[in-house]
Length: 336
Image 1 (cartoon, rainbow, N blue to C red):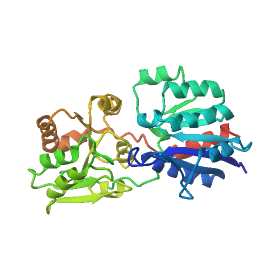
Image 2: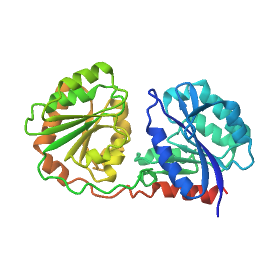
Image 3: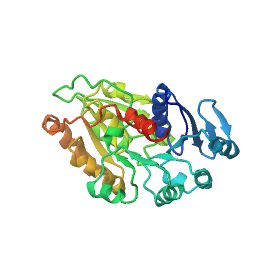
Image 4: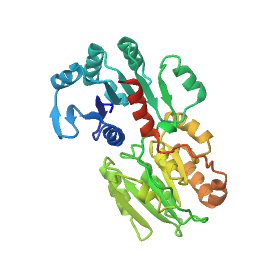
């Protein structure tokens, strides 16, 4: 029986969101099934927390963990521009370099990580479970030699697909992430309220602006249902014909259940990252937010041509729920 020891470092707070931690909890469940002992440590604003024990730890303790001869690897799910600028991140990296710790890194193509991998000089991997432009990945492979990329590495619990959609559009779900920093939820509700024949459900994330919450709650009616702080969007999504979401990881969750959905990107930068997904014809593209009129026109077209729009949607199954087992296999085959 293979027995390995690992540490996972990730993020979870109001500032960083909880998507990183959720992904690592899912991965951890599979690691345990395969006799791989793993401890999750997450950064919560300025604190380090042991996930299982729910108590703070310090860098002296982490130093001791990494110094053990039986430490096989560390898993990093830390991709966040704000966090990368913090001293606490630099301190962690210093320890990896000190002990030449092999790494599996999620979602990070930064120069800092590339330099670290060169210094460590160990068989480490970068895992990016998304759809990218081919040229982008071709360039990255020149620097990140052990790169695993694409939706087949998506870490999701296996979920049954949506049983079936109505041919006519009857109900819509709005989900704009945990914080909705562009305040799109209220804008979408204002656009949709004129469609009296449609039922609308809205998910309010845990980090919405309090004034936005008040505005959203004022639009609640017999045709509008509001959900708060949802841990798993899929059971709710399955009860709707269409979801309108922002350009985050939710689109991969909805893709996994063959859901009809439309994506509005918060800005041009997010839209550029989302473009390769659009080109696969996996969703309806609402572009990036410019103004309320433009968004309203795009949604009006979508509603009036719903059947035609999704008739030609790509049905290729890109997520097979084997991503977690692929990553565990990678660990077992390369970190003994």
